[in-house]
Each structure stands twice: as C-alpha cells, then as structure tokens.
Length: 383
Length: 165
Ligand code: SF4
Ligand code: SF4
Image (cartoon, rainbow over the protein chains, first blue to last red):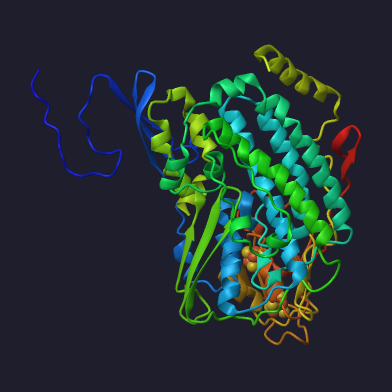
C-alpha cells in the first residue's frame, strides 16, 4: 500500500489528522450531556485500557467574566451565579466579599450568620445533585433517586429564605437581600435534622456497598504530592490527605466563630473522592445547627448601599470554600460603577487538570467513576 | 465486612423504604405552599420581605413611570419595556408603565428592589407557560391582576418520613 500523506498543519484539538496506530483507537466521549456533562474527553484506548486522555472543556462558555465588565456591581449578581446554579450562593460569595472590600461597607452580624446558613444549605444542595449523578454514572439508580429527592428538603428551605429554588440572587454587597421568614429557625432545624438522618442512610446502600467499593477503590489514585503539584482544591485535595479547607485556613464572615471540622481521607482514589463530599454534608449540618444557635435573634441584615456604588481604585482577590473547592474572584476596579476586569478562579477547572493523569492506565469502564469523582462542574469550568 | 453481608445490608436498606411514604409532590393536583405573599421590597428600610419570586404585581395607583425598574433590568435581562397606558393617573405624568417579558426575565427581583414607590412586587404565581412567545409578554394591565394561586401542600416530617401533604 502506498504511503499515506498526512497533513501536518496545526488544527484545533480533535480536528487534526493523526498518525494511526493499529492498536490505539481514539474515542470521543461527549460533548453531549450523559456521561460527560457538556464536555468532551478524547480518550485513546488500547483494548480496554486508556493510554491517553485529553479533556476538552469549553462547550458551555458564556463569557461571564467579559459580561461583568459592562454591568454594575449589583446587576452583576444574577448572572455571576449562573456558572453553578446549584451552588449559586457559594459561587457568588467571593464576588460579594470582594465588592464589600472595594466599596468599603460593613456587614451586620446577623447577615453574616444568614449567609453562612445559606451557603451551607447550598453546599448540600449542590453535593446532593453531584451525588445523584455519580450514582447514575455508576449505574446505581437508587443513588440517583434518593439524593434527588432529599435535596428537596433543603431546596424548600432555600425557597423559603430567598424566594427562588435554584438561582437565588440572595447575597448582596452589604449583607443579604431579605431577612429569613418568621419561624424559620424551627423549620430549618427540623428539616436539616431529618436531612442528616436521611444522608446517614446512604452509607449502607452506597458507601459501604461492596459493589461500589470494588468499582471505585484503587481507581484513579492521586497521591498527596501530585494533588498539591497539580493544584487541585477542595474535596479532591482532601481525599488525597491534605487538610486544607478555606473555612478554617482563611475564615470569612463568621466561620471563625463556628466549630468547623474538615474531613480528610488518605487513599486518594475515586472512593475517597466520592466520600469526602458526603462527609462534608454531615459537617454542613453541624455548621447550620451551630449557626442557627449563635445567630443574633434580631437586628439589621443589610447595610444600605448607594444606588450605583463605585469601588475604589484597587484590586481584590477573595476566595471561599464552595461545594467543589476553592472558588475565587479577582476584581480590578478603576473607580467606576462597573468592575474594570473580573476573573473567576474556579475549582472545577483546577481539578480537571488531574484527569489525564488519573485516567492513564485505567479501564475505559472506570472512566465515569474517575471523571465525576473529581467534583467537576462543566459550566463552572467554562464560565 | 464480607461481600455478602454488605450486599444484604444494601438490599435491606432499600427494602426498608417500602414502608416509607412517597415523598414526591403530585403536581399539578397538589401545589406547594409558600411563605408570605411573594417577594416585596421596602425602600424605606432598604430590606426586602421574603417570599416567592414569581410573576410581578404592578400597582397602577403607585407607579410614577420613573423607569428605575427598567434601568435595573437593563443590566440583567432587558425584560422590562416601558409602554403607554390608556388610563390617566395623577402621579404618572407620562402615562408609562413597565411591561415584562417573561421569556427573558430571570426572576431575580432586582427591579422590585429598584422601585422607590412601592409599585412593583412579586407574587406567588409561577405558572406562566404559554403556547406563544407573545403570550409571555405581560402588559401593565395583566400585571395588575392579583393571581389566584392554589397552595395546599406543605412538607410534613413525621415518624414515617417526609412527604408532601
Ligand atoms: S426580576 Fe430581574 S430579570 Fe425579571 S424583570 Fe425584574 S430585574 Fe428583570
Ligand atoms: S414600577 Fe416603580 S420603578 Fe417601575 S416605573 Fe413604576 S414607579 Fe418607577
């Protein structure tokens, strides 16, 4: 057979013609939703084993950062929470903290507690959704139904506080937009306690299930050194044995007044990475209970802002621990009502960097287990 | 724990659920109850009142046509257009009031926060689906109507688990 001529022109990833190896097959996983989440993973397989994996995010890029430059500090709020609608309080949190720094306003004590409660509720809502998808990725449909149902308890609470079920637009520079409804403490306590009881039941059916363990233990092992070297954050970092949680290391609002524990596991495999968020939810329930107890029973919840607040000429970077890991927001202000430049530093993107390392040598069937254990949210990574 | 006991425990945990009441809300026969009368804002104190962020309520006797709501929405969704209204109101010299396009609105409530005259609130009405795009555009006259919303289910938690009832 005549030698094939292969063009060597540089093309976008996935489009270039490649030298074909008889043994190696290239598979495109995605970018449609099931199993990849609007993202493509280009995997090269040798038989059943992955020899190379190249995640290709960007399908749901919406230009949130650019959009922020033409909107003022308040009207930025509804669209900046779009990257992670299920965790909208936490993705908005660093932005709000940053703007407070720039504008120079104080937040009332009660508002800080309300924010912590809302953020923790949101963290659980996000993790439940993530867990539901992890369940269905592994073919465990009960684990899809249960978290999807139980998160309704918390969505109901968020709806009572903020008036919206997913995109709350609740935090605002200077506090929160409205006070919690009357009798909220009791309802919240009741629902959070029941929620905690429910998620403890996941142990038997999911986390202690020998089938799940066989599937996820020792797959995609990320060592402590690699986890630090690759710059992973949040649950991925903590599953590899690094005790780093921004709620403790850089406490914001009232986290320093609360007794927060982090969960650290040593193994660094998919099982540990899937267990950490579940342990985080149990911890969140503790934090919510503490915050409800310590919260001032009355008082102001919002410092009034000027109608079109201008930030001083400066730049700020604030970060918080979101449901996935560190979520940061860098704002450059030139003294205008709009930010000059806004950059979101999101954990999804940083955790994704570990994926090619983890998939190498794995079986193709283990790909979903490894991929989703990275606590990755495609829209957040693309922004 | 051995594999067999683990599997039995997992199965058992699922079987126990047969005795638990169904949690699902049977929409549209059942509809959720909300706190309050919808999201409202008090410009005097600068704080809002908790409630569902649903379809807006426009009070024609308060609206001055100042356009602040539409300016607030420009940065969000550009859902508000100021349109002429036929009736004359003393406080509204230009006779213009907001018209809201629910195909664009994201229900953030920032327009409610912007209104200084207690003219724009949000109501508990969330059933806004329509067969046409034009059907989603609510004129000031439509926004004036107070919605009748069925609200009969609440989350109940008792010994048999949580359910809507
Ligand atoms: S709720 Fe938000 S998106 Fe809807 S009309 Fe008001 S400002 Fe615009
Ligand atoms: S609804 Fe309020 S903000 Fe909008 S035009 Fe009328 S008075 Fe002005």
